[in-house]
Length: 114
Image (tube, rainbow, N blue to C red; front, side):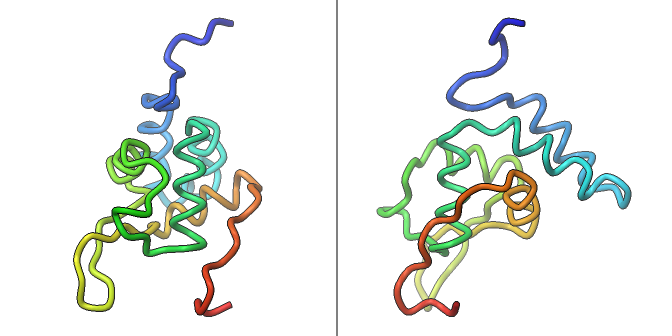
């Protein structure tokens, strides 16, 4: 099997289909591992950062392009934090996809609730 369709952006088609199917009642949890498998390592790392250190300020995001991919997929959202713009947070679906991938989590940022 060749690596066609897989790049630094992951497998965008597989991710799109998995996320669409997660929108169905019976597909939410069953397609989360498929979405995880479609993510590139950079996308996974940013999602991990958003889940465990977020919301993350624009200047502190690991990869702006991977963040953009996650936003496009519905795994991240732009948000305000403490009255300021310029932050990104993980979506609920991101948590489900992350747990399905059984990834190692980032350390929680100091001062965040445990």
